[in-house]
Figure 1 (tube, rainbow, N blue to C red):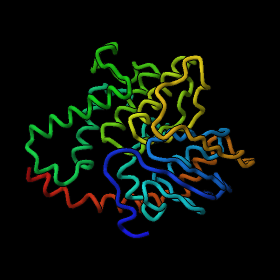
Figure 2 (figure 1 turned 90 degrees about the vertical axis):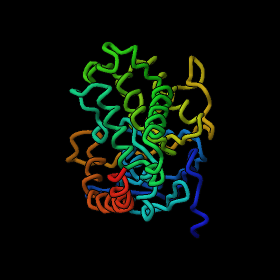
Figure 3 (figure 1 turned 45 degrees about the vertical axis):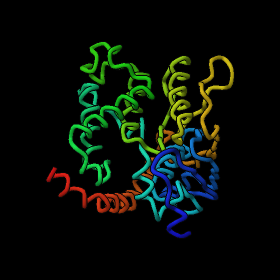
Figure 4 (figure 1 turned 30 degrees about the horizontal axis):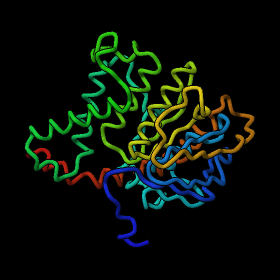
Length: 295
């Protein structure tokens, strides 16, 4: 594949494809023979029993875990070779154990921290040439758009933006985690355990957020089972439709203490590979630092 073939627009969702994708850890197979074919703006629902590698598949398709076999391509970038490029246009929403919110911080502090990180590492180099006032206004507009997409009304919180995360209910925390991920205007949003421990109405509300994000054109990769049609099913329809990907039964593991042990083991086994890819991403962003410090 030539350079022209992988060059894409910087807005809108990305296509995701995989065939025979697999990941093996020291305790055996985490997932195997996974096939995906989804266009831009699709909602990809990863379904399967606990411990069947759903979370690892999510991290693999966002360039944060290295597969051990098969083929995968996201936004025209082949994995794992172009994992750093995939990480740059993808974002993780709520993913337990990876993007957990800090209970002691307020909602405003989380939003402020994300804005600073986005300015430092997420903005293109040419944005540094834009007057500060324009950059601030653009950042505020992105934040407002992200909050609206996640359905998070700051004024409706118990103490407004000063509400601490520990005082949020599960749905509000889900909305905040999703909004934080959307501030960078990702082309691929990944969310784990959608609806976990949520009552039926709140579960539908959480899926409705993701349906709306996909309907706006962003590709969504979500672990969980979307509510069945009817009875207040999420609206509107994702731009690229709904694609269901099923992972197999978890491999028997006499040492496993929980359903997610295999996932955790695979994450440990591939930590060195992920660190190497992260170094690639930092190297790509490094030239921005001197310019930013001069502004």
